[in-house]
Amino acid sequence: MADDKIKKSTERWQSDIIVDLIKQFDFPYIALNPGASYRGLHDSLVNYGENKPEMLLCNHEKIAVQIAHGYAKATGKPMIAIVHNVVGLLHAPMGIYYAYIDRSPVFIIGATGPMDEKLRRPFIDWIHTAFAQGDVVRGFTKWDYQPGSIHGVPDSFARAYSIMMSEPQGPVYMVYDSAMQEAKLTEDVPVPNFHIKVPSRVAPEQSVIDHAADMLVAAKNPLLLTEYAARMPMGFQSTVELAETVGASVYDINKRLGFPNKHPLSVSFHNDAFDGVDLVTALDVVDWTRGSHKLNSQTREVQVMTTGDCKWIDIGFADIEISKWATDYNKHHNWDHRVLGDSALSIPALTAAVKKRVDGNKSLVSRIAERKKAIGERHDRQWQKWQDQVKAQWDERPMTEARLAHEAWQVIKDEDWVLTANTLKEWTHKVWDFDKPYRHLGRELGTGTQIGMSIGAALAYKGTGKLVVDIQPDGDLMFDLGALWMPIKYNIPMLILMYNNRAYYNDWAHQIHMAHQRGTDPQRAYIGMDLEGPPPDFAHIAKGIGWYAEGVIEDPAEVGPALKRAIAQVKAGKPALVDAVVWRRGENA
Image (tube, rainbow, N blue to C red):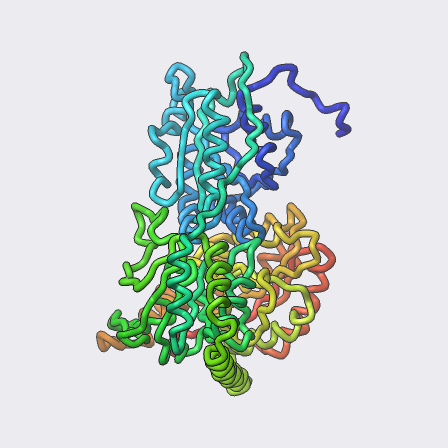
């Protein structure tokens, strides 16, 4: 329909104010599942706002939040996700929780039935009205608010955006009364032009930076442990510079791609990474035990991999914004030194301080050079071991994760690729070359999270020429098969390579551990775990929604040709799926 034929309202509505704010804060998209509780806002978005930013229809509120989560991880920019009232909000918490613990900004808008009882429709508005609706997600959002009238909307909207985007970032939840949305705008409600939308970053004190630098240059074998220091649009360059300046090895926890995996100072996923380390410097780390502690999965006993006299420095946000509901903050550590500040500022400041101590100190320069040489040799030996493991598993059937990683790499290595989440039990990091910060958004989160976040990443890179690759676990996709519809509807090109072991293999492995511990039969561990009888035909399902799809593939030699055909479809603007069966780790755990 031509623009001059579109019927416009002759009056203003209170929900128009919310649209004015959405436009002012420059949100790129709005992911939503429709609901009557925000019908006023929906009409304002479509007609007053002319669907700019574009609304993306989702088939589940959790997916809407996860798409915004993935988009933010890829770009550093937040999206809006809208959830319908009490029932829509109750669909969304897992998506919100993982956005919170993954430090991803998502601006979530909800609605409630009229707080004024005389305006409530019989039954439906009563069951859709809750007092303190934000209680549902308050434990894992940075802030929630329900303005009492339209006059409270501009101020609270701006405050929510500022809270969401201030580091450490995270989701916020705003609730708008449906009667308020639907009411006419009968008076002038000022919407200020908010000049400063986010405050400046938190900078560390120079004295604590200097002390950290002294500790680093005095250490014989320092290691940098990184988790959230790299985050889009920032990359890992500052960590690389610090590592090269001090001659430190680097272990990347991989919540974001924090260090190039083929850099000679990388010791990520090395079993001996912490051997002989006398100083660990944690760069924006929550999970400080990863790599430095070894878990016995059967007994839950933890073995510390560092020596008792190893010192620890914490650089990051310490205990700012930890959840009062979930223990996502990990065990408290007896740090030797703490630097409170945003690592975007702290790491360059620490590098500058180390350089001052190194420059002109010939003995220190020589020691750093020798250390870098030794770490590089360790790195090269470990890299070769991994390539030898690929060869050793070459003929196994079904193919192993190592072989699948190798076959995929041979096809995508000449593309400008982005990996969304899953790493095939880190085999992508042991075979692929993660040479640029955007190559990987960070490791996978809990089951039932990956497809939504991957679609969000593909949306972020739509039109850029980048090949977005989702190595998609089968059990994870079974939660959210309907999400495959969205890339078709909105022309979002992406490549899915199924990581299909026809089981919830992680829990299968746990049951094998239990069997070994209790003396029961490990052959019965598959019960309640396998995705057989029948195994889902993901290629058939994807084709039914409109994807290009091939599979199921059991011969690893067929993976490469299938991926080449699928990539040709992706480059033509169509999503494509290749279904490959891999070895069930649970059977041999």
